[in-house]
Image 1 (cartoon, one colour):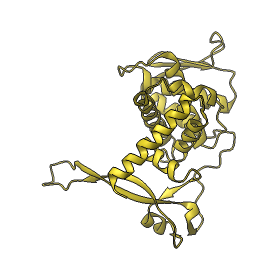
Image 2 (cartoon, one colour):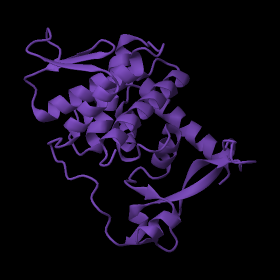
Image 3 (cartoon, helix red, strand yellow):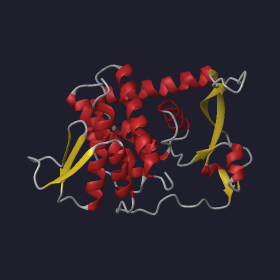
Length: 260
């Protein structure tokens, strides 16, 4: 498959998602957001490609990467096409490498391989464990003040640009999810010139919270009925929201990983 063919496949998947949302079916977006939790280090376009070709995929990697991990692609398995950049060579040591094009490459899901067991990335099941403290460290590193309040007029948390307030009575899973939700607001909707409608802002933040919570092993709040609010009839604005959700979720997840 060539890069332009892969791009058309990603565009087709996005179009099908937009059509599903236009018909009031948010299940497709719910599935996509769950896939984002599994493949947070891929672009949203490549996640669309992975899901459209193998909806059941859980952990993908290239042929050589699987080999390094002690696993081998089964004979006859068909690869999942994604798009990768072509990086131009440096002319001298002082020049940066630049993207000079794109090509289609193939990855394989773990179900298409045999070999050694993979190490467990997380054993969290309903308890955020050390992730809450890591998230708080990330918040502090951004210069954002964090306050715990006895009452927030019915809200679980509030973000006001440089300051996050959350209820002090939340249990640990709720605390983590609300913190992610408010951090998402800080990253997406404050001090960056981007201010979509309130319903879109809330839905984007909740989507980021769902993606990050699932990535660390928590059962995220089921906000599927709200996801449709991302779609206002424009495929371009849907893509914009998904792109920002993916970027914010990736930033947060990477800070939660050990050694970060």
